[in-house]
Image (tube, rainbow, N blue to C red; front, side, top):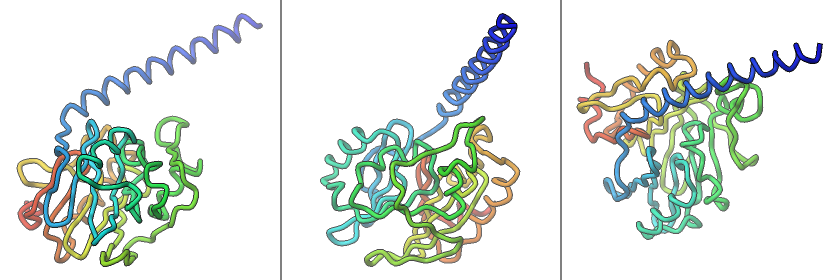
Length: 242
């Protein structure tokens, strides 16, 4: 009996190892198509930080800053912010489009900042929803502020609207800043100046992602689109016109 139990456990472990190995190979292949921007100033008071294959965005508001997503590696992000002359302690708010590790990995740098996520994304970090098999997401904060779909918050001189666009994760959210700058996280990519799907491999629900992606095409007054892995465009109208 014990032998059967051991064989069963070993078989399950082998299947899981093969599944995980295959997933990692597929992920690496898909990530080779990412084209994140180099660290620097983009436009007006918006800066970008590059961490391996992801971008985080920093928006200056006088002597303070807000951050949208925060990449993967805290040490790399801290070094890149130093190159920009930006002190992480001057960041007063972090808005996460979602809670995947490549968007929340450096969150611990900003312990003085308020953290915002969508109400629907909370289930990705409280054990109610798994990201892969039985593995969920996590962030090193429990004092986050939950935002409803289309809720607007004022942070300093910045007006920020949360726009729920689920599919990549359950609570994937885009942020429209000052009715002009649209930060889309991982709901769209950019190819030849046009919005496009991201690789389906990364979406939790590819059908839902395809349906809600259309929301990005109908944001009044938006002028810019900033993605997490595929750069940005300053021509919103061209990007969303097919």
